[in-house]
Length: 480
Image 1 (cartoon, rainbow, N blue to C red):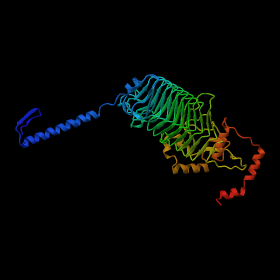
Image 2 (cartoon, helix red, strand yellow):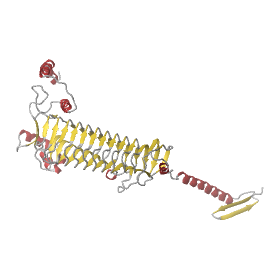
Image 3 (cartoon, rainbow, N blue to C red):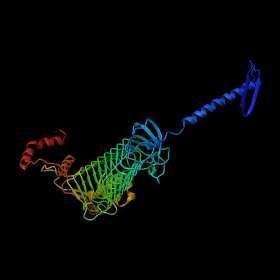
Image 4 (cartoon, one colour):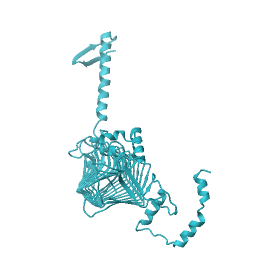
């Protein structure tokens, strides 16, 4: 068999003719060549498999204004700028990957909609606010998207009448302080931020923005669930904030309404459920504040003269401090709230002596020591809270380490038996409710949109006489 063999190996030609037996050297050369060919094929395939994703910008540019873009399922390359009023619907099958540069999607238009997309892998720059979605227009809709591994989630700047709804948002896996904000509003008005699920981002911030609705969002594992600054007349309704450092903090932002929110496990040295700094005309109703270091925190609030902050029908329970006044201040009305299981119900720090210059009325206090002899569900004597030896940790911050320790508890007990000095009255509630349920019912009756059936005094007295059995009540109290 006559074969003409030519092999290039390390740039040296090897020729032979009339090969019948291949010696050991030739076999080694052939094996090396085969391995090199196999390696070349593998490397070529690897490079082919890492080619960049197809550009999503091309699909956007080819969509007519007012049109609907439904891309084929798959992963596409970002960043993307949308400058026309189009609708992009990923139908839950499309991913846009920014490749670690800039924002995934920039909405530089009015009236666009992006929905059902997976937006991922933004840049890491705080200076350029690298986001899943940057909104720079009005009347846009961002809904039902998954935004992950993005420094910021949704950023709205000088934008109004946008809807951000039912998105699932998380930041990059950085330390808490250098993550981006899940949702950020800056000089933005009349937006609706609703039904979003937020995990492991830094804050949600509303700065220099007014008349926004923030409702039914669920945020966990962050720093500030919601932070207002110079933001007036916003409404916060029905949100669930849990396992964040702070629930809601309102700074220099008048006219904010906080209604029916659930805030829990805001712990740590600075943990608080709802805090206010130099803020006036707020309405705080129907909120549940549980297991926080501090439930309500007030710092020079209300700030504007002749204004009132209203706290009604809130549950503040199982916290270190129920209500903390940073100073002896006035102008707050606290009615029909329920204070249960707090280590300290009310405290005043910063050298303040009392919180009694505020109005306390019809609240339920689980540490109330009194009776209800006329059975009207209101305590026969006022609820009064005095400061005794526990004043030490309020006046001296370093002594807070010993708060709740046996030594301070014994000192407090002895001083209550025989006070060394005249104690300060922190709180006086003239009409303490005997049950938390009654406080809640009274608050619901006080709501202006509630219609209460009229029952005359004779019917109330007859019903009480028929249903109340003193002997049975005594037996029940003794557990018999």
